[in-house]
Structures are given as structure tokens and as C-alpha cells.
Length: 635
Ligand SMILES: *Cc1c(COP(=O)(O)O)cnc(C)c1O
Image 1 (cartoon, rainbow, N blue to C red):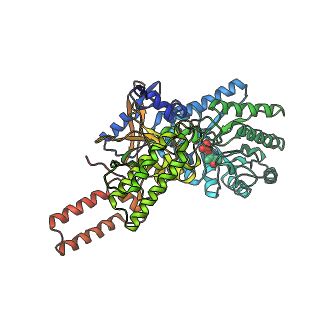
Image 2 (tube, helix red, strand yellow; image 1 turned 135 degrees about the vertical axis):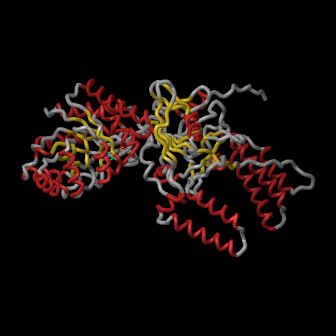
Image 3 (tube, helix red, strand yellow; image 1 turned 135 degrees about the horizontal axis):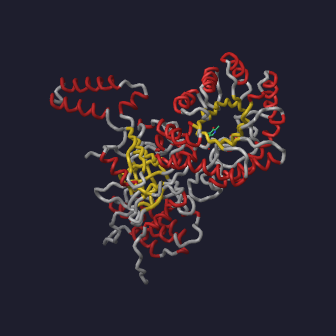
């Protein structure tokens, strides 16, 4: 056989393999020396350099990295894309964005969005009283939009009416008819004319995971009959002039642009008729739904999207214009509540690999004189292996191994023979797996063969704490090593986290063409850390997570890139200590320490340890209580 001399692996091959250009949205790239970089302001910084800065600051893995400029850049792109579409289409009103706090409520994120977004008048969307309080303490500019969704009690409404008095453009979006009397009454009592919005129940169905947000059985919004009732009540109260906003929300992560277009048309029909009913509508709010292309496939798949940001803006603006122009209705201000698309890109979960398990033979497969004849049968399988006999060989090797395992069970096969059999078995499976790459179609029998041979890489993170949507809704996020990308990743692996839960694993990856059950990775190097990043995790992951196994919040670092290619650590938050997480589940850290102290004291009295050992034990325990919940490397 002729051996082709293979070219050394190039970083560009890694780029293709992990699809970073496809999902990175120009915020992440690969340098020629094999590092993932964060890119903004025409400069790029290697994530590994940021990790080195973390190590110097004693911020251990796992760390949630936030790149503030990426947050800024997304807000800018969103507002500019709408401004461009408005200009292109000749739309005669403006765009206003609001950020829905529920998508990432962390103070650093909301404050950054409010501060940077101020130049665009970017406001906030709130769905609860705590979120309302956040909005009131974060926004400073009069005229900023506050959109109040969710079920609102008197206290919530009072906060909103005061916000109006303070100069904010605060809208109560009526989600159920029972809210209206409270709004009417409280605005009388407080002497404030309220801004009222109305949420319509959309019939347009969309594909994607969140499609139950619309349709007859949607739990949100008013039906046509309820709309009529609300309009009549407002007219009776002489408050129809307060009804200024119409709201709809088709769901999150809508992959198909034509679904969005249909929803917009439906919304416009409601808008037209509400105007004709006499409502003083001036705002049309399309909610969220702008999707993130997690897989980079640019398709209608649930985890992707078949449109660009510009396409989205164009579709909204143009459809509203055409539909309203045909009826001679003035153009309203367009509002959207994009959350996911604004915050997803800015956060990366970084963690190190602690260990691996491989499923390979550990040597010892050569025939020994006088060995059990079953072994030579087993060895014979690989000799007859070809692309045509894959299924036969796969069955044979399992049958012979079963005979040997049965023999071991009955005492006719010894431990060494059994061990050799397991090695031959694994070698044979690897030989079969190697042939699969040449096949157009993988026989069903061996469909999961590669997965069953994949390495397990143990990562220093908790899926339940940091990536809850992988567990809950099979969300895909791009995952890849952040360095060594100028080296060929020769292993195929699945990831396990450090919880003791068999669900704490990741075995579904975006793959280079289609979803893949394994991730290509590099073998670990002795004495060197191997770092992976999970990308696009800024939306919905941070507070849905839980304390499974009492792994707490991770360390969080915010960086800001500078034009000269340097970067600053702008904020560092140390994650939960063990004492923190214990107190979340109602232990009292002082009592926990006291209990341990008593146990140690008893051991001392019983002569099991001496006084010096007692001191040492108590000191170490106290240090643990103040330590990180994740695996810590000793320096
Ligand atoms: C969750 C939610 C959003 C955010 O949706 P994204 O798809 O993340 O942009 C917007 N508006 C409402 C009413 C929501 O419930």
C-alpha cells in the first residue's frame, strides 16, 4: 500500500471542523497559531491569554467569561440593522428595542445593556415586580421605554404609574382582562394617565421549541372576544386614548423567516382594526423570537435560523409598511424585545479537563502457546473483516466474546484469558469503526459503534448549574478546545461533568455538517491543562441552573477588549463558596463548623488524634468551607 505523506494540520482545518466561522457571528475566530480569539473593534484577543490572566488572579476553572464589547456590539448591530431597514424601506417611524431582563438578569449584563443602549434609547422589558425594580434602578434617561408584561398586581401597577410620573415611557401590557380594572382604579387614585398595551393571542403557528407560545391553546394574550371587551371597557372609562401599544410574541428562537412574516401580517390585521376601533395606537411590539444560529447551519432547524439580522429587520419593517399602507394607517413605532440574540454571544463557559477514560485495548493480544481455542476464533474475526462483512464481523466478535464471558462465569475461562479476549474485542471494534468512514451508508447495526468507543473526557463543570438547557431541552451549544487548534484533534469524545449524575453528560454536538454524538478533541498532555469553551451561553443559562450535588455559581469574569489588542479585567466575581451553597439549602455554616469541631474534639478525647492534628483538621475544614465548590488544582 502506498503511504501518502500527510500535510501538517492547519488551524484553518480546525476552523472548518468546529464551524467557528459559521456560528461565531464574527465575534470568535481562530488565530494561525491555533487559539480561539474573541474579536471586536477590529482586534482580537486569544481566550487562552485571558485564561492566563485568570490563573494569575487565582480565579480557578470553571469560569464564565463575559466579553462586554460583544454585548455592546450586538446592541449596536440590532439598532443599526433596524435603522437601515427603515431607511431602505422608507418607513416613516422609528425603532426602539427593549431588553427582556429574564433572559439574563445578572446586574453586570443589565447595567451594561442599559448604559451602552442609552444612545439608542434601548429600554427594558420586565415580567415581574423584581424585574420592575431592576428597571427603575437601572434606567436613567427620561423617555426610556419600560414594557411591563406578565401578571400585574396593584403594587406592580403602582410602581409603573410612578415610573410614568418620573418621565419613563412605561407601558402596561394587558395579558388578561382582570388587570384592566386595577390599572383604571390605581391611575385614578394616583392621578396618572397610564400608557396601556394589549397583548394579542396569535394564531400563526411557528416551528421551533417554543411554538406553544402562539396558537389557540397559548397561555398568553387576549382572544378576539377579550380584545373587544377590553376596548369597550376602555371606551366606557374614556381611556381609549391610553391604549397606545399592541404587543405580540410568537415564541423564542424562531428558526424560519416565513413564520415570522406570517406572524407580522396577523399582528398588523389586529393593529388595523384596533385603530379603527378608536385606539390611539402608536407602538407595535413584536416581542422576542429573533434566533441565534447555535449550529451555524443557517437552516430551519430548531437550533439554527434561516435568516440574517438584516433579513429579520427587513421582514418586519417592510411587512408592516405594506400591510398598513394598503389600509391607509399611519406607521407606528416598531418595538422588539430581543433577548437571546442580544446576550447569547457575550458569554463563554470555560473549563478544564480533569481526566479521560478511553475504550481501547491495553496491549496483550498476541497468541500464547496452549491458550484457550476461543481466543483464536475471536482473533480470526478481524482477518475476515472487509467493508462487505462489517455486520457479520460485528456479530461474530460479540458472539465469541459472550462465549468467553460465559466461560469465565462457569469457571472454565481464567482471568488472563478473559482480559485478552476483551482486548481483542476492542481492537476488532476499532478496526470495524475505521471502515465506517469509507461507507456511504452506515448499517443500522453499527450506527452507535463510534459512540460506544468514544473517550469520556471529564470536565470541571456542572451541566445542571451552568448549562441547564442541555439537560432540560437538548439545546446544542458550540463546544470546542480554545487552544492547540494547530494540532489535529485525534480523539473522539463525549463529555462528562463532575456531578455524580449519569445525566451530567454531553453527547450531542453541532458537528461540522450535521449533529454528531462525539466531539473531536486532543489527547491530554502530561502536566498541561486542556481548556474547552462552551459558546453562546449568555441567554437563559445563568439563573435556570440549580445546585445539583451542591455545585454553586461559577467564577465570573468580565473583560473589555481595547483597540490596541490588549484587554482589561473589568469585573471579577468569585463563585459560591461551600459555605454559600450550604446556606442556600438552610444549613448554618457556623453550626456545620461547630458540629465538626465537636466530632474532632471527641476523637481527641478518645485518643485517636493528638492536639496538633486536631488544630490541623479544624483549620483545613474552615478553609474548605470558604473554598470553591468545583475541583481545585493545588498550586
Ligand atoms: C422571553 C420573552 C422575550 C425574549 O425572547 P427572545 O426570543 O429571547 O428574544 C421577549 N418578550 C417576551 C414577552 C418574552 O416572554
